[in-house]
Length: 253
Image (cartoon, rainbow, N blue to C red; front, side, top):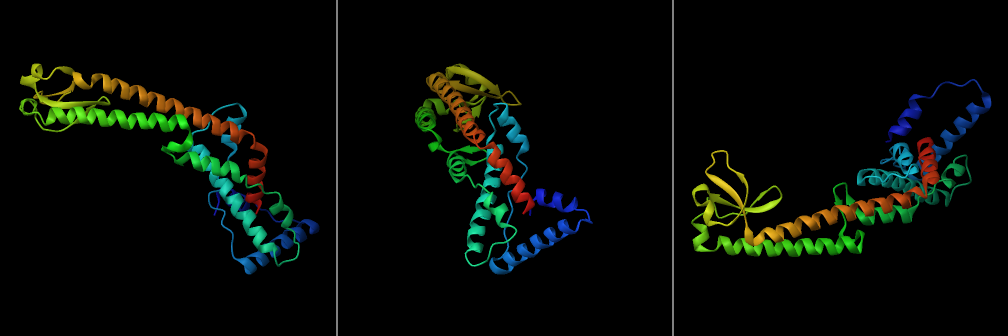
C-alpha cells in the first residue's frame, strides 16, 4: 500500500547471516501476530517527503500540494501509533515495539495544515484573519458590481444596445456584449470583440473602479495565501528530523 514499502520488498535479498535471519523471521512472526489479533494496518498516503524536506532546509516555502502530501505521511503515522496502542493492550512485548515507539504523529502540525488547506486548490477562509477579511471584501465588491451591471441590463435604453442581456468576463473584468454599431452608446472600455466583429465586450465606466478594486483584492488574496503557506512551511521545518524518522519507520513496517 506504499511505494516505499514496495521498494524495500523489491530490494530484499537472501541472507546467510543466522542472526539476521532469526531477527527477520521474528519480526515477520510478530507482524502476523498483530494482524491476527487486531487486523491489518493501512500505510496509504505514505509518499517520500525527501524533496519537500530538502526544500524546507534551504528556507523555501512549500506548495499546498507538498504540504498535503506531508499530511498523508503524518496521517499514516497517526494510524500506526493508534494501531500500536490498540494492539499492545493485550499482547506481550515483541520485536516491533521499538519501531512503533519511535513514530511521532505530530498531530498538532497535521491539524494545523488541515485547518488551513482544504484541498490542493483551496485555502480555508479561516487560515488567517487577513484572508477572511480580504475574501469578505471580494464578496462585497462582487455584489456591488453585479448590482451595477444588473441595473444596466434592466434599463430599457441599454438593453437595446446589447447582443444578449448577460454579464460576461473578459480579461478578468466584468463586461457587457454590445452591438458594434452601438459602441458609442455604452461608455466604457473595450476589452474584446467577437470573431465576426459584430459584438464588442465593453466594461461600463460605472464599474471600472469596482473592477480595479476587485483586481487589487485578488492580488492581496494571492499574497496572503503565500504568507500562509510560508508560515506553514516554517512550522513544518521545525519537525524535519521527526518526519524523516516517521517515513523510515513506516517504510520498514
